[in-house]
Amino acid sequence: MKNKSVLSMVMLFSLCCGSLWNTGCDNGSPSDASDKTQTVTKIQGKTMGTFYAIKVVGGYKGGEDGLRNLAESCFKEIVDKISTFDKHAELYRLNEHFSTEPYEISDGLSKIIQDTVYIGHRIENATDITVGPLVNLWGFGKDKRLEKAPSDEEVSATLKYVGLDKFELRFDNGKSYLIKSDPQVQIDLATVGEGLGADAVAKKLLFEGYQNFMVNVAGASRSYGVNDKGYKWKVGIEDPTSPAPKVFAPVCTLDKAVATAGSYRNFFKDDTTGKVYSHAIDPKTGYPVSHHTLSVTVIAESAYEADALDTGLLVLGADKALLWGRENNYAVATIELVDGKTVFRYTDTFKPFLDCGAKTN
Ligand code: ADP
Ligand code: MG
Image (cartoon, rainbow, N blue to C red; front, side, top):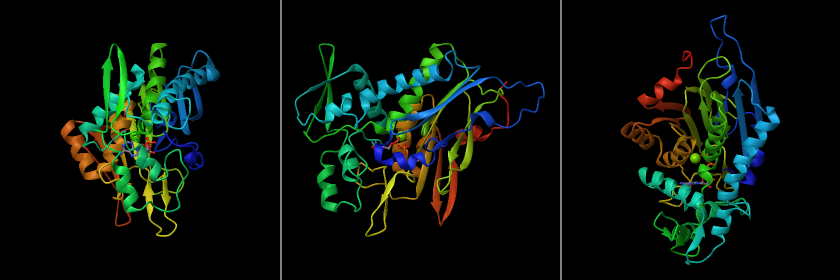
């Protein structure tokens, strides 16, 4: 979930939806002349300060307007829960609760927090939902953008409120409570907003009986079945070095989710030193990632899971991300900048997804 201040930057890439391109409708030319292209209901719009795009093969019963209503009601439910920008959102209110007294939260929010903490634990706590104070300190939060990096002292003072041990969840009499160990502790679920959004729309479409569709919310996508030409859905991993939107590598999947986290789009430059700071923050050091990994792409069973993993794996860097993928049987791909050149690496399990030629049936 992007903040408002990056909206203009994201708008420049209005077709690209963050780090993944929805290219599902032009997935090669079917060699079989009897292939028929089906009707597709396609919509694009804005949510969570970024872009979404949805395609439903066979057409959506309520047309574009009906599909837009469906998508926007799903997104609204998520924003109402986890936005750190919207004053009415549940998470915003939790963050405004500057106290160590238990704060009651909904079961829905409690589940997202538990799941994201669990995923964080799997990857050395590199996805850490308590990074909020650091996100604000580095100018990527609801406060204004920075022109100068914070001092080392400010970073270490802020780190005191960061860590998955800085809060606990308590369940009492059927209710969930979050207890901060310090009033300054903040919860930031921005990194999973896009994945949650893509899954929520996909779940609704499945429930309504649709079998072939693709939902993209910026860097997270969830697709089912095949595209209008009967091919696997295709998204493009964005070229992190290209100033204009450009596909670096196509990824074709069947009934899977893909998410990409990048260190190259949302950043600020220190006017004095010229140093560039990314919005992915290492919760161990308190500093934005500064290694040469530009993006990490993860394929998983849900867009939420892929989105929760990608930011942490980006923080860990390409070597660790690929090792983790291999050891845990997740398809992971990384793009690094080495000696001015991009290096694309991926796990063996990622390789089949780079084959976009074959039809699935
Ligand atoms: P990307 O498209 O690169 O995955 P997201 O918008 O999904 O970006 O997530 C980036 C946001 O996640 C940041 O703006 C910040 O709010 C939050 N964030 C930054 N570092 C971390 C981290 N290590 N763990 C969890 N959330 C983080
Ligand atoms: Mg993410």
